[in-house]
Image (cartoon, rainbow, N blue to C red; front, top):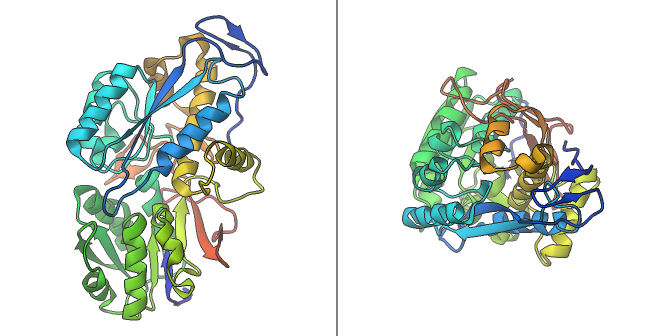
Length: 397
């Protein structure tokens, strides 16, 4: 077995700054933005048991504030319209109507019930969803063209990484939700099994009072790796349970696993070597575009530490700038949607590019995920570093 067995938790854009036409006047590079604001919606879940992701809004706001010191989008100022859905389907519908009423050109972010409840409303209004996809609708809806790959890219990439490491047995602890089951099966379990890996799946409730039983069940049969399909604080609690149970398999999960501050409080012996996926290179302080992100976050979101989610929404807003600058006076929700649908080499900030000819597959069906590239990163001495020789990896290549 080539995989080191230890107690671990395994979880470009060239911004067009040239002259841009405005709907009200013109602007050249260096001029302050003018005219009506370009509004972008951000849906997120905050203050809910097991899910607390305000950093999604924080990253978008930091990007908007930064662009307003430059030349905005298409020469116009940027306004971020945030909405906390609180994990409530009814609130998702309210958020969606708010975005429609505000006239946003796109919606980013993430909500566990957004795809079935908010997306139909914004989609009917012709507003593209460019956030993190976690449901069937967000993978395939005619109005949904995520700028980063989300789970559709993350889990196949993690599967490929561990397959290359030579794993033979794997367990998957997943959130007992439709989106969790979808990820456990089509995005992770299927590619592992196709490679000859034996897979066991263990569902568990979000915010479960005790994750120990699920960890014990997942650890039966001495697996090589246990994948954890939970976000934030629940992921940290599963890491603690794995330590207490004495799990020696590698534990693997998505980048969101490290979002909650309680994760950093887990025993260092547990988190050292933890492996995650990442849609962007937010963790590389020497990268030219990452420097822009980190400086903006420091200036406009004082106290907020760089993270996977704020990096993703920052990246999305900056990529919308590239698209918007190209569209100029024709910028609207409809023209952004058309540009995304026909994406061919659109550079993604802190990442690679959108290309309609290289979509992620869901049970063999092409999705609207046109950026499947991921980084595999791990914690080393308390910091995130590349685990795959600074290479992008795709589970569909």
